[in-house]
Each structure stands twice: as C-alpha cells, then as structure tokens.
Image (cartoon, rainbow, N blue to C red; front, side):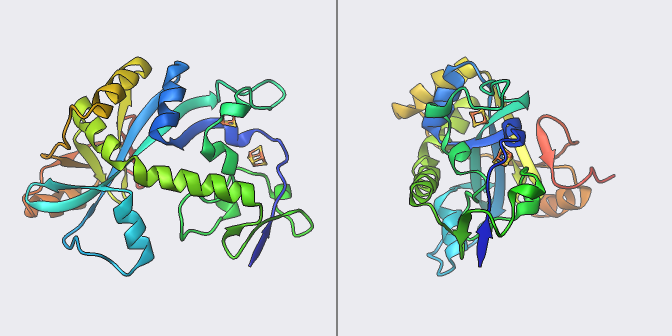
Length: 251
Ligand code: SF4
Ligand code: SF4
C-alpha cells in the first residue's frame, strides 16, 4: 500500500504541541526554557517472558517493570514537549526557527513514530490537500520512501528504548509514582524546565533507583473498583492538567 503526501506549510503541526522527546531532546527543549511533561500509562504484565509478538516486544522494550500493590505492571513513560498555541520556535511565516535542532518527531511528521502502526491521515493535522495520489510518495507498506527520514525514524525509536532506564529513575527522583491504566488516558507530571535539567543530571550519575509503590489514577469508577478488588492502590481523579483521559469522567 502506498501513501502520497506533500507538506502545505500550514503550520498546524506546530500548534498545541505534545511532542514525544528523547531524554537528550527534552534537556535541549527545557534548556531553552520550554515546558516538558512526564506522561505515564501502564499495562498489567503478569508474564515477563519473551514474546513472539512483535508489538508486545516493542511495548516491553519501551517500558519498565513495577508493582502496583502486588500486581506486576509495565510503565511507558514519555517525555513530552508541551505548548499551548504556536510552538515558541514557530516563525510568523510558519517556518521553524529551530530548524537545525528541531526534535526528531518534528523531522518525521506525519510519519508514524510507533512501529506496527500505519499512518492514518485523518489522525494527522495536515489538511486534506496534503494527501493525494499525485503527490510524492511518503511510504510504501509502512516503510518511509525517503531513506533519510527512515534513519531519523529509526533513531527516534531506538532512543525510546535506550532512554527507559533513565526515565524510570527520573520518575523516582521527581517523586512521580502515578500512572494511568493503558488505553484510558495518561497521568501527567509537570516539571519546571530548570528542575528537569537538574534531575536528569542527578539520575544520569546513577543516584536513583526505580521506585516501586506505584498507584493507578483513573477517571472511571469501574476501573477504580476493578483495581481496588485486586488490592491495587488506585485514585479516582477528574480530567484536568494532571490526567489526560481517553474517556469522559465516569460518574
Ligand atoms: S520545533 Fe519547529 S518543527 Fe517542531 S513544533 Fe516547533 S516550530 Fe514546529
Ligand atoms: S500539519 Fe502537515 S501539512 Fe501542515 S505544516 Fe505540518 S506537516 Fe505540513
């Protein structure tokens, strides 16, 4: 299957950001004084053996093991550049003012950063006229047509794996031990840029271990009850800056 695309320079992808960053990119972003959040979601993970399923292997490689109560989970922690409105680097003519140092996720958009997921144009911010069979080839059978973009995509994915130990210790150093239940939303830890830089330096020198004692946060009473029945620490919350839900709050 082929997907054809050409950027219209509309600038929509540079507004209302949540850009997934590597640790190094997060430090560069915070070093310019911009906001980086920690986002977490967790999967119950009763069997930690090797999986022949490539999607499960990727999920495992990009997450770390914790216990929530006595139940084993794996947590995916994302470092995310957050900005309401226009990116602080966006120039009035919609060009990037940080072009040479822009994060990989900006370089690969609208390609899909996660493996085993197809690009879905309707889930991209690009306007309909950016997608047309007469335009240049973006990807064929899920593979980028441009080898340079493919290399950036591969580097982004590798960083998502390589950064797991540092991100696990980062949460510990920040005292952040709450996570959403995977598929229901994301728990959010907002960190001031300078604090992030300080803590990354600390954990990079090996001063912190991965914290245990995690709790699940959810805005669904049914999920809270199910987890409580398993003796998992759980906290019922409402949608807001600290919890980005996939579903409306459950009464
Ligand atoms: S860094 Fe540049 S490309 Fe990335 S969102 Fe900001 S303006 Fe857009
Ligand atoms: S949203 Fe799509 S078409 Fe618009 S600037 Fe970004 S990549 Fe280009």
